[in-house]
Image (tube, rainbow, N blue to C red; front, side):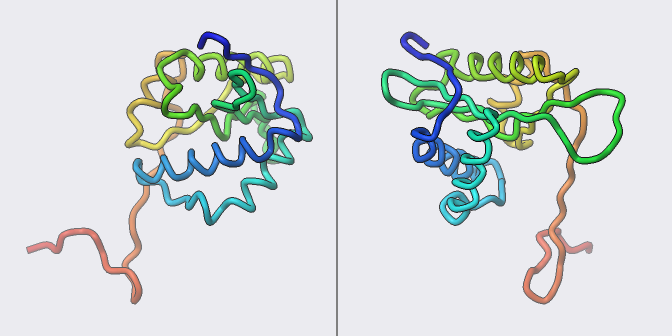
Length: 166
């Protein structure tokens, strides 16, 4: 964490943050994510640019190197709710920089920014198999709020992964 500054991302950070977001998608494949990082690069670039324009992206920087980022936004899906929900759609720290407090700094920044924007609660997602991320979020006071289930569909191009009954 020494020498790391968390600050708003700017246009000069698009390439570095895009590279990290692609790495995030690739890393999540080990935890059963279906998102393809390299194949999604163009979409990620557009997302990074949009979030920078909205001042909704912060980077962790050591000297001139972006070592992590957090994206944050208020949830605006048209539903009326009894709380204003802030959302962290992505957070990532380079593997060599993990366990040094950078993820905590990024979450602190997201909590401050979203709170200042009017959020009452903050949501984020972690893949069920990503124990390390789930532990970090739990330690930060996040609690499980919704569980998503997934089941493969058996059809002509996909065979079932379920064992056959005897």
